[in-house]
Length: 267
Image (cartoon, rainbow, N blue to C red; front, side, top):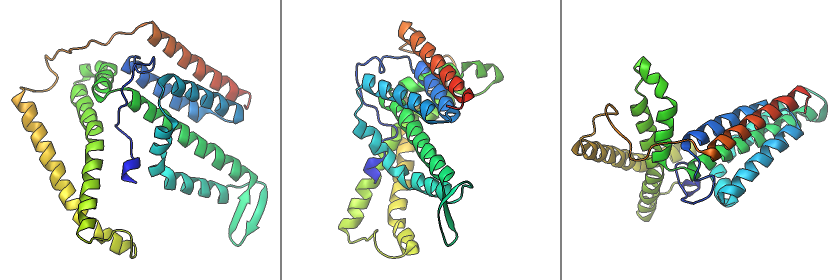
């Protein structure tokens, strides 16, 4: 299960999606999420799915990597679908005991599951095609107007970048600790829920110790390089919008406008 968590990973490439400005990708993800929540029926969801499929093809990211990122959320997705199937009022199709399966419940469950999958895949696609440093620069640039209100934009962007960077590292560290504990005879798969929770203590303690040690080493390294926040800092790579970024934003506006139009007509 831990190996299925792909959040924070970056797959280098030289596709048109990889070359987009990180600010463009962040804005496009926001537009795509808004469009997904405005989708109402099969036609609008089909448009959103076709848009995501086009981006996946252009980015050359394998579908296997995207579906792999959905595995940790499978329980949440199924639980959400079950709640919508059994607890939505409408035309009853099947009824037994205290449970009722309605036509509207099945439709809502299908659309909700599809929405979650498209949302997660679209968000993961951004992290797969954008390095953490580029994401930090893009987020800081987009939030730069808040600096006039003395909002710590640079520090916030730096924290998010460090968090994304260390997610794969902590997952790998957890996997090593679990393997080491199993080699010593630890059992994490049998017993009731309380016994399993108690068995996690030998994992959590060394994991927290390792995380704090890495944080201390990172802080020391940043201080040795005279890092004192974002004031007065310059960037090695300056972000500039290009023609492909403008075309992408126009395409995002067309997508959002099309979804709003389809919603107006009940599609």
